[in-house]
Length: 399
Image 1 (cartoon, helix red, strand yellow):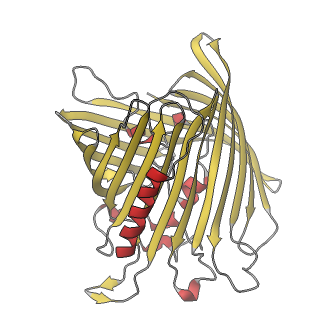
Image 2 (cartoon, rainbow, N blue to C red):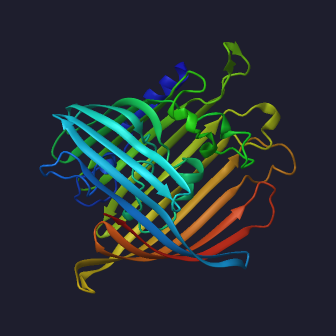
Image 3 (tube, rainbow, N blue to C red):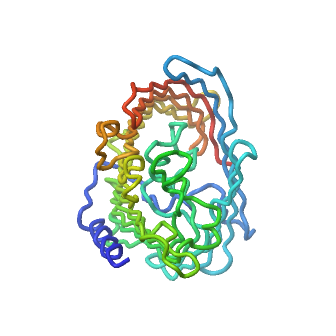
């Protein structure tokens, strides 16, 4: 674990010394605030507030010219509960229903104990701070219906974990904000390799058991530092990692320790009216030698969103409606490594995507969006490129 601590400190210090910013709006909300920056929080007389969001879409996609036709889905229905338990103590939870009741999960259930803005203790089921998307993934906040490839196929968004740690914000002056998150969590488990996906897949390392216990007795570490300027925007650097495999059974060592490391950089900025945000991520996984030809040791990718408001006026009886145009470019190499066989040496599993959209926001927390998406997939066997294209129309709204 020693080298992980050293790497963590190095990355976190880099978040202070290596940050550069682009042009941004004058918003003072940083990515760390996303979990509380929701309309369900009330300052009224009641101690508990209830809220949430819903997301529904229609989909029409074809793969290499073959389509299964038109379909509709109720993708998500999430419920929030918030309560100020006492002076400087807050409770927050989120219950998620996906595709009706096909998947039901407790996404967040945490308590924050505030000493001051620079020092807060957090414990419970929390969202590790990895990139921009895992902690700020609510559908009403985004113009593109699908989540980015790199934020789901590499960073396993939504990643919720049992853990505890510290977070806070520092204000060197009225224009600059420094934030930090430092958590210890149970961590992803054995399914990262030897899983039904047939490739290295961090999402397969999520196991309901990790809400109750660690599979190897060595928690993983998560840290994120960000620098934000009220005019120019925010940039953050994050680390997540540790030992992922079960290497002991009944006190006997049965395998070597195998480590996982994820490093992510995210940014958010505005250039006049244009909003630009995205993230880049790389993961490194120790894979046993006999299966390195199948399960890659490296994954990397990222996305960039561009959003531009083309109209802001009274529209369809909505007083302050906004029409946005949006573009997303994304990339993910899901199976990188030192392949030696002829069948694997040329490429891993590579995903490229381009999405364009137009959206109407009758109010800030509600979006009606139409997207066109084109997706290229190259598999590990270097077969001809698979081309996926289609349209989506849907709505997402806080309530």
